[in-house]
Image (cartoon, rainbow, N blue to C red; front, top):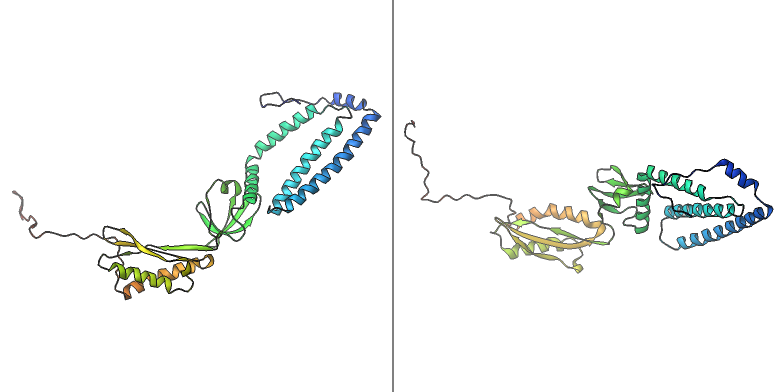
Length: 292
Protein backbone atom coordinates (compact mmCIF):
# COMPACT_ATOMS: atom_id res chain seq x y z
CA UNK A 1 0.00 0.00 0.00
CA UNK A 2 1.54 3.38 -0.95
CA UNK A 3 2.43 5.82 1.83
CA UNK A 4 0.33 8.98 1.81
CA UNK A 5 2.24 12.22 2.31
CA UNK A 6 0.81 15.61 3.19
CA UNK A 7 2.05 16.98 -0.14
CA UNK A 8 0.17 14.35 -2.11
CA UNK A 9 -3.24 15.06 -3.57
CA UNK A 10 -6.10 13.64 -1.58
CA UNK A 11 -7.34 10.50 -3.36
CA UNK A 12 -10.99 10.24 -4.25
CA UNK A 13 -13.31 7.26 -4.40
CA UNK A 14 -15.24 6.81 -7.66
CA UNK A 15 -18.76 5.52 -6.83
CA UNK A 16 -19.15 4.01 -10.30
CA UNK A 17 -15.97 2.01 -9.82
CA UNK A 18 -17.25 0.68 -6.51
CA UNK A 19 -20.56 -0.29 -8.12
CA UNK A 20 -18.70 -2.23 -10.80
CA UNK A 21 -16.64 -4.01 -8.16
CA UNK A 22 -19.79 -4.97 -6.28
CA UNK A 23 -21.34 -6.36 -9.46
CA UNK A 24 -18.30 -8.59 -9.96
CA UNK A 25 -18.60 -10.21 -6.53
CA UNK A 26 -18.72 -13.99 -6.84
CA UNK A 27 -20.19 -16.65 -4.56
CA UNK A 28 -16.74 -17.93 -3.69
CA UNK A 29 -15.72 -14.39 -2.76
CA UNK A 30 -18.74 -14.02 -0.48
CA UNK A 31 -17.98 -17.39 1.14
CA UNK A 32 -14.34 -16.37 1.70
CA UNK A 33 -15.44 -13.01 3.11
CA UNK A 34 -17.85 -14.68 5.55
CA UNK A 35 -15.17 -17.10 6.72
CA UNK A 36 -12.73 -14.19 7.12
CA UNK A 37 -15.29 -12.19 9.09
CA UNK A 38 -16.09 -15.08 11.46
CA UNK A 39 -12.43 -15.88 12.05
CA UNK A 40 -11.61 -12.19 12.53
CA UNK A 41 -14.34 -11.71 15.14
CA UNK A 42 -13.24 -14.80 17.06
CA UNK A 43 -9.59 -13.72 16.98
CA UNK A 44 -10.49 -10.21 18.10
CA UNK A 45 -12.51 -11.50 21.04
CA UNK A 46 -9.70 -13.83 22.11
CA UNK A 47 -7.08 -11.09 21.83
CA UNK A 48 -9.19 -8.55 23.72
CA UNK A 49 -9.91 -11.08 26.46
CA UNK A 50 -6.20 -11.86 26.76
CA UNK A 51 -5.33 -8.15 26.89
CA UNK A 52 -7.99 -7.46 29.52
CA UNK A 53 -6.56 -10.20 31.74
CA UNK A 54 -3.06 -8.84 31.21
CA UNK A 55 -4.18 -5.30 32.06
CA UNK A 56 -5.99 -6.51 35.20
CA UNK A 57 -2.71 -7.90 36.56
CA UNK A 58 -1.07 -4.49 36.36
CA UNK A 59 -1.55 -1.40 38.51
CA UNK A 60 -2.99 0.46 35.53
CA UNK A 61 -5.94 2.72 36.27
CA UNK A 62 -9.38 1.37 35.29
CA UNK A 63 -10.10 4.40 33.09
CA UNK A 64 -6.88 3.89 31.17
CA UNK A 65 -7.60 0.16 30.76
CA UNK A 66 -11.02 0.96 29.30
CA UNK A 67 -9.55 3.54 26.92
CA UNK A 68 -6.87 1.16 25.65
CA UNK A 69 -9.46 -1.60 25.27
CA UNK A 70 -11.68 0.61 23.09
CA UNK A 71 -8.76 1.88 20.97
CA UNK A 72 -7.45 -1.63 20.34
CA UNK A 73 -10.92 -2.95 19.54
CA UNK A 74 -11.48 -0.15 17.01
CA UNK A 75 -8.09 -0.79 15.36
CA UNK A 76 -8.70 -4.56 15.18
CA UNK A 77 -12.16 -4.22 13.65
CA UNK A 78 -10.85 -1.67 11.16
CA UNK A 79 -8.23 -4.18 10.00
CA UNK A 80 -10.91 -6.91 9.96
CA UNK A 81 -13.13 -4.84 7.62
CA UNK A 82 -10.21 -4.43 5.21
CA UNK A 83 -9.52 -8.17 5.29
CA UNK A 84 -13.20 -8.95 4.63
CA UNK A 85 -13.41 -6.59 1.65
CA UNK A 86 -10.36 -8.06 -0.12
CA UNK A 87 -11.94 -11.48 -0.97
CA UNK A 88 -14.91 -9.61 -2.43
CA UNK A 89 -12.62 -7.94 -4.94
CA UNK A 90 -13.22 -4.41 -3.60
CA UNK A 91 -10.18 -2.14 -3.81
CA UNK A 92 -9.68 -0.59 -0.37
CA UNK A 93 -6.51 1.37 -1.17
CA UNK A 94 -8.32 4.63 -1.95
CA UNK A 95 -10.68 4.13 0.97
CA UNK A 96 -7.81 3.68 3.41
CA UNK A 97 -6.03 6.75 1.99
CA UNK A 98 -9.14 8.90 2.40
CA UNK A 99 -9.63 7.68 5.96
CA UNK A 100 -5.97 8.47 6.68
CA UNK A 101 -6.42 12.06 5.52
CA UNK A 102 -9.64 12.41 7.53
CA UNK A 103 -7.90 11.01 10.60
CA UNK A 104 -4.98 13.39 10.18
CA UNK A 105 -7.28 16.41 9.82
CA UNK A 106 -9.27 15.28 12.86
CA UNK A 107 -6.12 14.85 14.96
CA UNK A 108 -4.88 18.34 13.99
CA UNK A 109 -8.23 19.88 14.88
CA UNK A 110 -8.29 18.04 18.21
CA UNK A 111 -4.63 18.66 19.07
CA UNK A 112 -5.26 20.16 22.52
CA UNK A 113 -7.84 17.50 23.31
CA UNK A 114 -5.48 14.71 22.33
CA UNK A 115 -2.61 16.36 24.24
CA UNK A 116 -4.69 16.26 27.41
CA UNK A 117 -5.63 12.63 26.76
CA UNK A 118 -1.96 11.73 26.21
CA UNK A 119 -1.06 13.59 29.40
CA UNK A 120 -3.76 11.73 31.30
CA UNK A 121 -2.48 8.39 30.02
CA UNK A 122 1.04 9.34 31.08
CA UNK A 123 -0.20 10.22 34.58
CA UNK A 124 -2.11 6.95 34.85
CA UNK A 125 0.94 4.93 33.77
CA UNK A 126 3.70 6.73 35.70
CA UNK A 127 1.48 7.57 38.72
CA UNK A 128 3.43 10.58 40.07
CA UNK A 129 0.54 11.09 42.51
CA UNK A 130 -2.76 9.54 43.55
CA UNK A 131 -6.02 10.74 45.05
CA UNK A 132 -5.45 12.39 48.42
CA UNK A 133 -1.77 13.23 47.85
CA UNK A 134 -0.47 16.70 48.73
CA UNK A 135 1.38 17.98 45.68
CA UNK A 136 3.06 21.03 44.23
CA UNK A 137 2.57 21.57 40.48
CA UNK A 138 4.14 24.83 39.40
CA UNK A 139 2.56 27.55 41.54
CA UNK A 140 -0.37 25.34 42.58
CA UNK A 141 -0.16 23.63 45.98
CA UNK A 142 -2.93 21.43 47.31
CA UNK A 143 -4.55 18.02 47.68
CA UNK A 144 -5.39 15.92 44.60
CA UNK A 145 -9.16 15.42 44.60
CA UNK A 146 -9.74 14.06 41.10
CA UNK A 147 -7.86 12.53 38.17
CA UNK A 148 -9.35 11.86 34.73
CA UNK A 149 -8.11 11.72 31.15
CA UNK A 150 -8.39 15.46 30.58
CA UNK A 151 -8.00 17.35 33.86
CA UNK A 152 -6.60 16.87 37.35
CA UNK A 153 -8.42 18.56 40.23
CA UNK A 154 -6.41 20.03 43.11
CA UNK A 155 -7.97 21.48 46.27
CA UNK A 156 -5.86 24.35 47.61
CA UNK A 157 -5.47 25.46 51.24
CA UNK A 158 -8.09 28.18 50.82
CA UNK A 159 -10.56 25.57 49.48
CA UNK A 160 -10.32 26.50 45.81
CA UNK A 161 -10.70 23.71 43.25
CA UNK A 162 -8.12 24.14 40.48
CA UNK A 163 -8.62 22.11 37.28
CA UNK A 164 -5.22 21.66 35.64
CA UNK A 165 -5.01 20.31 32.06
CA UNK A 166 -3.05 17.07 32.04
CA UNK A 167 -0.94 18.33 29.14
CA UNK A 168 0.29 21.16 31.39
CA UNK A 169 0.94 18.90 34.39
CA UNK A 170 3.25 16.45 32.61
CA UNK A 171 5.49 19.29 31.37
CA UNK A 172 6.08 20.70 34.87
CA UNK A 173 8.02 19.56 37.91
CA UNK A 174 5.72 17.64 40.27
CA UNK A 175 6.57 17.58 43.97
CA UNK A 176 4.63 14.92 45.89
CA UNK A 177 4.82 15.45 49.64
CA UNK A 178 2.94 12.27 50.53
CA UNK A 179 5.06 9.69 48.73
CA UNK A 180 7.27 8.92 51.75
CA UNK A 181 5.92 8.22 55.27
CA UNK A 182 8.47 10.51 56.95
CA UNK A 183 9.50 14.12 56.39
CA UNK A 184 12.27 16.32 57.72
CA UNK A 185 11.63 19.71 59.27
CA UNK A 186 14.23 22.47 59.05
CA UNK A 187 14.51 25.71 61.01
CA UNK A 188 17.18 28.40 60.60
CA UNK A 189 16.94 30.96 63.41
CA UNK A 190 19.41 33.86 63.58
CA UNK A 191 20.83 34.70 67.00
CA UNK A 192 22.96 37.53 68.34
CA UNK A 193 26.72 37.08 68.58
CA UNK A 194 26.39 37.81 72.32
CA UNK A 195 24.56 34.51 72.96
CA UNK A 196 26.80 31.56 73.87
CA UNK A 197 26.85 29.06 71.01
CA UNK A 198 26.45 26.01 73.24
CA UNK A 199 23.46 27.56 75.00
CA UNK A 200 21.71 28.12 71.65
CA UNK A 201 22.49 24.56 70.51
CA UNK A 202 21.19 23.07 73.75
CA UNK A 203 18.03 25.18 73.61
CA UNK A 204 17.26 24.15 70.04
CA UNK A 205 17.85 20.51 70.89
CA UNK A 206 15.55 20.80 73.92
CA UNK A 207 12.80 22.25 71.71
CA UNK A 208 13.05 19.24 69.37
CA UNK A 209 13.26 16.63 72.11
CA UNK A 210 10.36 18.20 74.02
CA UNK A 211 7.84 17.27 71.32
CA UNK A 212 6.82 13.57 71.50
CA UNK A 213 5.85 13.62 67.81
CA UNK A 214 9.46 14.19 66.78
CA UNK A 215 11.19 10.94 65.79
CA UNK A 216 14.31 11.25 67.90
CA UNK A 217 15.48 7.78 66.86
CA UNK A 218 16.09 9.13 63.35
CA UNK A 219 18.48 11.76 64.71
CA UNK A 220 18.34 15.48 65.47
CA UNK A 221 20.74 17.78 63.62
CA UNK A 222 21.70 21.02 65.43
CA UNK A 223 24.68 23.11 64.30
CA UNK A 224 25.88 26.56 63.35
CA UNK A 225 25.23 27.05 59.65
CA UNK A 226 26.53 30.56 58.94
CA UNK A 227 28.24 33.58 60.48
CA UNK A 228 26.41 36.61 59.14
CA UNK A 229 27.18 40.32 59.28
CA UNK A 230 25.20 40.90 62.46
CA UNK A 231 24.02 37.46 63.58
CA UNK A 232 24.88 33.78 63.76
CA UNK A 233 22.60 31.46 61.80
CA UNK A 234 21.79 28.07 63.30
CA UNK A 235 20.12 25.08 61.69
CA UNK A 236 17.79 22.58 63.36
CA UNK A 237 16.66 19.51 61.45
CA UNK A 238 14.42 16.77 62.80
CA UNK A 239 12.18 14.00 61.47
CA UNK A 240 8.48 13.36 61.91
CA UNK A 241 5.65 11.42 60.35
CA UNK A 242 4.18 12.96 57.24
CA UNK A 243 0.80 13.66 58.82
CA UNK A 244 2.43 15.52 61.75
CA UNK A 245 4.62 17.82 59.64
CA UNK A 246 2.59 21.04 59.64
CA UNK A 247 1.39 20.73 63.24
CA UNK A 248 4.95 20.35 64.49
CA UNK A 249 6.19 23.12 62.22
CA UNK A 250 3.76 25.72 63.53
CA UNK A 251 4.10 24.55 67.15
CA UNK A 252 7.88 24.96 66.98
CA UNK A 253 7.54 28.37 65.34
CA UNK A 254 5.16 29.45 68.11
CA UNK A 255 7.49 28.22 70.86
CA UNK A 256 10.80 29.37 69.39
CA UNK A 257 10.86 33.02 70.52
CA UNK A 258 9.34 32.48 74.00
CA UNK A 259 11.85 29.70 74.66
CA UNK A 260 14.74 31.87 73.50
CA UNK A 261 13.50 34.81 75.58
CA UNK A 262 13.32 32.60 78.69
CA UNK A 263 16.90 31.46 78.07
CA UNK A 264 18.13 35.02 77.52
CA UNK A 265 18.85 34.45 73.84
CA UNK A 266 18.24 37.36 71.49
CA UNK A 267 16.79 36.63 68.05
CA UNK A 268 18.26 39.24 65.75
CA UNK A 269 16.89 40.98 62.70
CA UNK A 270 18.69 42.90 59.95
CA UNK A 271 20.03 46.14 61.39
CA UNK A 272 22.96 48.52 60.98
CA UNK A 273 25.10 49.93 63.77
CA UNK A 274 26.81 53.24 62.99
CA UNK A 275 29.88 54.17 65.11
CA UNK A 276 31.23 57.76 65.01
CA UNK A 277 34.84 58.23 66.05
CA UNK A 278 35.56 60.76 68.80
CA UNK A 279 37.94 62.82 66.63
CA UNK A 280 35.48 63.00 63.76
CA UNK A 281 33.68 66.16 64.90
CA UNK A 282 31.09 67.50 62.45
CA UNK A 283 32.04 70.59 60.42
CA UNK A 284 29.70 73.33 61.57
CA UNK A 285 31.41 76.24 59.81
CA UNK A 286 29.25 78.49 57.63
CA UNK A 287 30.42 79.05 54.07
CA UNK A 288 31.52 82.59 53.17
CA UNK A 289 28.76 84.88 51.90
CA UNK A 290 26.04 83.06 53.86
CA UNK A 291 24.60 84.03 57.22
CA UNK A 292 24.23 81.52 59.96
